Image (cartoon, rainbow, N blue to C red; front, side):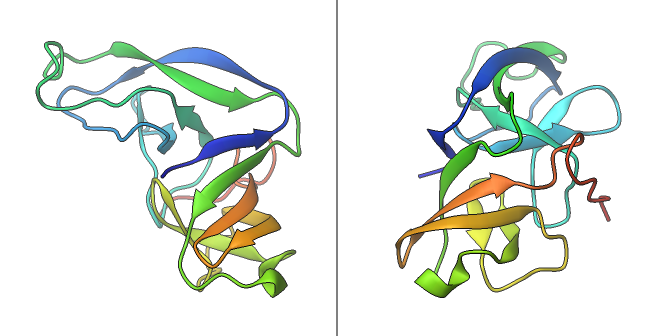
Length: 142
């Protein structure tokens, strides 16, 4: 699983990606400083949204720079996403947590506070809002 829209208003925008950059469908993305989106990681900030299609090495345009990719971006502050994690508990609601990678939340870390837990689904799935959108809470990359 990856980031999947749970509730809220979003829209699809298109942004360029770098050459030879793989993406999992549903990966959280941010800008790389060169005007292109790349997959988020544990140290990324100012997230843009969630990529709607995978990019893999077998794609005909994989090695081409600036190919436009569809990104689902939040249109309101409290858009909620479901995301996988490990060892989640109901008491996680209200906690600010980090990312493990572009498709997984790290409920055991809060150095970057990229996500706010707003709901509990199971020990492996949480509902979150993205705190580290550029227009909400700027989380600097390191």
